[in-house]
Length: 226
Image (tube, rainbow, N blue to C red):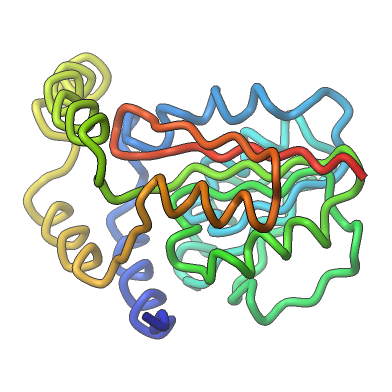
């Protein structure tokens, strides 16, 4: 199914108006794990789907230059106002329309955005634009298909409540309005299964490590050798 980026942009502009993200959510709880894959001295990082800039701000403390791209103009406005740094360049636009020279980046990272992009394109883009030794780091949502998926992601409902209580001080991270905004957006989302993701990754970037994460997500880590 072809993504309608006008709808995606509209959805995320509405999400941007919800304000700051909760202290703990299903994306930022993995940020420290993602950052562990970025070596000291990394020069240039592309953050695809940077959203409100929370991860971009963390990246700026470890990377010489962060290019942070998002389709939604209100997301970029929020990021520039709340997560600015001298070494972050926030760009509003569709990464599919942007041109970068081969071997431009040491890191390409994306959280909860890969399912909005043609997956084959994203992996080939990373293969072309990363420098030797560079890494592609993805955190995204996947569709349950195996018994293990249903077991792990079914069990996640319990620690989800506990972490919300501990980190956010409430049973649910979102108020009713926020929940409804995300629900409407979710109606447009389409996810691949972990099996499909591994098959595509093996075809385009052999050696990529795909791991199921507890809170309905997976990570993909791939290092370009040459």
